[in-house]
Image (cartoon, rainbow, N blue to C red):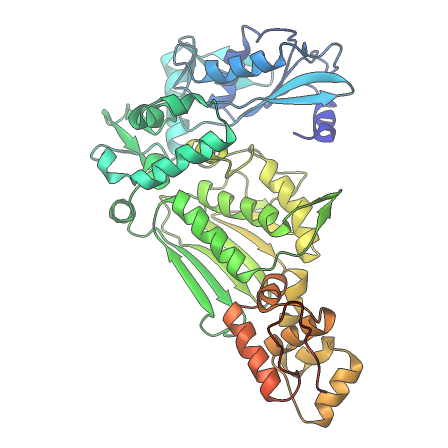
Length: 482
């Protein structure tokens, strides 16, 4: 969490999704009562080292911070403290020379206990659920809200992809070298990640939908969810059909990597400095888009997931169970995961950030990438719409006007010779004019034109006498012939 975001958060009083706790050199004894109640209700944020009114007097002892964060992670993974376990990763934030610990707790798809008690959350605090009616209502609400806990009694370890499991371990190890899951065998790791559970209503236990979607082999995913599919489509040159298409029906860890490769193939990554450090705008934007479309999908809904790049922009549509219908903005977004255990596993691997971070990142980085805010709608079908990257927006210009971005003298010479260029030919020619030493691959990367299309366009420009043939010496420039 950024310092300014935390300061803004501390301006408000405690509420159903926000809890302040004094803490100097140890984790407060009642902290997991709040963790439990947040998991059982709508999630929330716990800030340690803060007074009840949001003021930071002393913060947390700097010498105790590391051990406290370690204790929180260990206790969240201890079934004697929290059952079922839900691994938390606290953050340390420095505020005006004082340290505080921030713990994000999402809403869970299961009912949790702290030290044997079930807690629920209200505006006034954490309350033990004592009566059968209260507890039954909590289980019923979870069952209606979440499908990722759907149990498949005949789903076995041999139905999971061992390469995907090993890849997940490797990613976790890279991000958290001392992660408590790394010392566990695969079966126990999946149990600790809440991917194996017991269905009280139907008296059956087994691996759940979250486990299937994270690690399942394609044939078993299709057997359980025959309608599940992700279509990634490019419609830039051929609007009637498509220029390229990728269809995915496998597990979401493999799908994440395939979709990110698809994005890299078709969308540019312009040079951008954030402060003094170069960052990839493309990765910042689509890391959020792709992870969210996978971990927040309603998998019991038969609507396909679609990721489309066309001349009007980029559109992502996803099957959804809306929490709050309508446009999603920075002012009204709610931290509410559709599949908390899938989301938590992605976070442990480093494929996703803390809940709520994704929306903020999209509203920050999409305007830098496309020149305009994204349009996000939470409904039965969740949609994210954004413009084309700035360097591709010439592709939107219709018909003969496609050449209008070229310099006037070049336009005049093309007209005199009766040469009309296509949109992609214009983009390639513009790239050569702006950077005479640009390579084929750089044109593809910066301007979002498919690499084979770049090669074809260059040949056409050469054959029509617009551009001289380029030697293959390093830094050899392109030369116009008109």
